[in-house]
Amino acid sequence: MGRYDRQLLVFGDEGQERIWKAKVGIVGCGGLGTNVSTALGVAGVGHFVIMDSDVPEDTNLNRQYVFCRHVDSREESRPKAELLAEWILGLNPKADVEYHVSRFGEDTWSVFDDCDILVDCLDSIEGRMVLNRYAVEKGKPLVHGGVHAFIGEITVIIPGRTPCLKCMMGDIPEPERPLPSIGSVVTTIGSMEATEVLKLILDRSSRTEGTFLSIDFEDWRVTPVHFKRDPGCPVCRRFGLS
Ligand SMILES: [Zn+2]
Image (cartoon, rainbow, N blue to C red; front, side, top):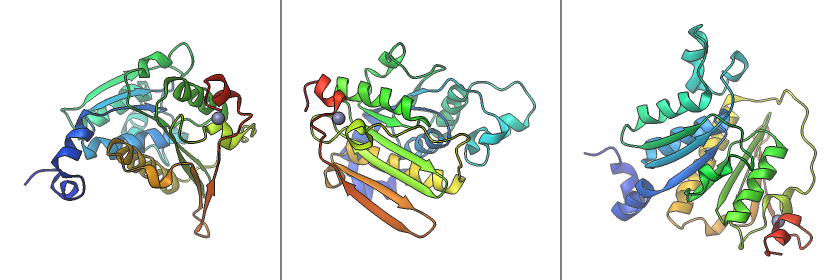
């Protein structure tokens, strides 16, 4: 019996091989990034590039369980990206994990140039829009996820086929900080992002393309919003997609 037997029933040997060969860029190693990495690590993704500039702190620990023992140990903490890389290798020692202790931006984004898929695990609108611009410029699929208290959201951007994040969000303002955050909601949205990554690897994502899904976990209200590309979107226009 092998560790992937139950998912081979869904993906088959060829699908599992594609999962192993995929290179996934995870931008942000907080609540979403740790959950996405965990789900993809145990699914058998073979190649990761992860980035975050922070070190873990007490206020992260209701959702960023990967770091609990490091923050409690009273040692001077190492960066989240380094600790998460160790965590992924703990799940699958054969994986290839490249980590970067940096903020995502124009000066650092080239480390993701070899990735097949990008995952938005950031927590600011500004950072997300920079990532969206990079994804559209490079033509890379981008899985976006976000959480705010009981509300979660997710969408998949495929440059040239779907609207981009700017088309969907426009100029929405940054939310007030600190951001309210519930660990179980973060875990759910992170797991959904990971599922979208697997679907992209396996070419099974087309059913949800262009749909922005908002979920209110307090009253189980699920709202799919179907977007079209905004002809005035500066990002799509800049890269000749509008
Ligand atoms: Zn756009």
